[in-house]
Image (cartoon, rainbow, N blue to C red):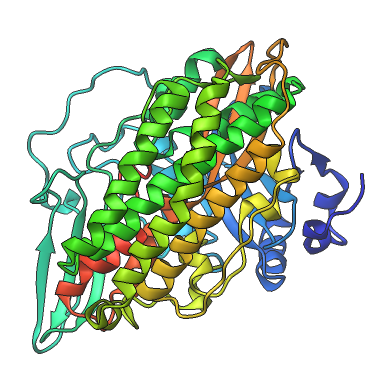
Length: 523
């Protein structure tokens, strides 16, 4: 096997000798416990980023729990996955070296009961206080059925927010129930006067058990589960799941299906980001500035319905390509509509930024510093607005993106204004990409025939919010383990830093400029 750049951190280790390629761009490396600390140090020193940490039970016939640590080097196509056995349900924490591991480790601890020694935060994550102490839903021996929740919660089991003490410090709790039609999330502000000195985010109030639900189902049945991970990332998540299964099974996707998938992915990006830029205008009470964006978003959703039969494009992506072709007349109508789109969008964009009030509220508000991007594994427009060039469509091209590469806009401001500008650019670039693909769209089938194989694979896609990661393990023809990590799971932690020094009324604007998914986090 050739030695990709990601493997330089393993030079001189026994781990390198046993590394083997996966079905996609990932490389698996079983690691001995004695070597593990030195390898973690080397990966940290070499600037690698921990993009996921998850667990599987009885993997490949091995009894017990196995931990998988997925690392990437920004701009490198390969992903390194360290495979480590959890001895006696205990493992050493890596969060001191890789802060993104904090939520990953707490998630694994809740799901499988592994205790991470040396962790700086071992509170529960998705299992809130009402769940029994010894309940770990992702263990094979835990049946997927309704359980009895605790009616009385002992004081020592109550969730403890991090204390913020000092003269003049007071707490403002916001949520988990909100005034509008919005999913639950709790935001605990510590404030001195008007400026925010600390924010702690708590999610996972509606945990759905998506990963447990997938166990024992056929890959075809799991496509609908992937679509439901986050309603406005239907295509991104279904494509990511299908790509993993296709790589395992050696399926060759027809060229027409590959390119139509890219069209649908970019249509999803357009309507998602249109909602973001409109929301920023709404949250500074600039309703007239937001209205044109909302109109364009509605028109895009109607185009989606014409193309696929669903405004959110459900039910069209399938394993092996697409479940149905897109009518040629609707593709022509889409191309014709998109010719008028840029002018209307630019007028709306310029209307917002021609207002001194808008610029005043956006500029230097909600700063996400560049130095936080790698430690927290921030991706998508948040990272690109903070000066980091990362986009899975270019760094790890898949499907039609191997031939059609987007132009990526990078800004250094890291504030609401930078995120507004980056997202505005990406909307227009998605329009440009779709037009290029439609001009060169081949005829032919949109699905391929193949047999589902056993195996495992990791796939990543660039969803509207950033990198979504899916790991699929198929055993005896059914899904044995399905791990999903959306961009929102990591990006939520950015908002805790972005609000520092701002005032509480700026929080809705900062939050909307990121527009992270509650459902996509709380799986």
